[in-house]
Image (cartoon, rainbow, N blue to C red; front, side, top):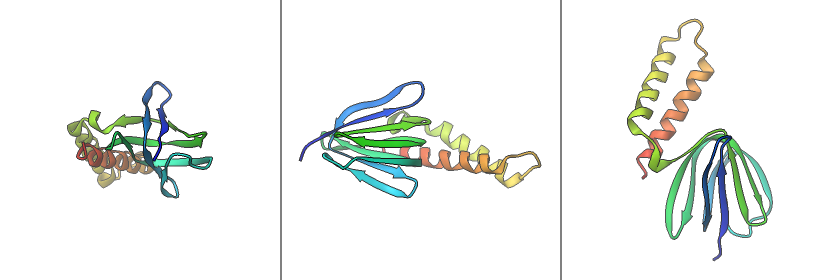
Length: 133
């Protein structure tokens, strides 16, 4: 079937750099798949899970927004932050979820609700991905 190069990069490190069979990205307009020989594409990404298949095995990466660029059989993901599902600390993600839920429930003056809701969304996605390892 063929392969493509996957590069997942954050401002401070390269999270993944490997040859893969396919990838599914969390685009802002919905998920989209990338296969070898994919047409050039540039898409914004939302908070979600990026799934890729390498050596017949599915792997997951938490993506906290960014952009995906497909060009010349290379998928480059420039993410605000990214974390391999295998490295997600479930207990820490659960604590972050509970903290965000408390902030939303209390709705105190001075609490940035959009920020609290975004934190909740990130924590929920990290928990989901940690269970897929």
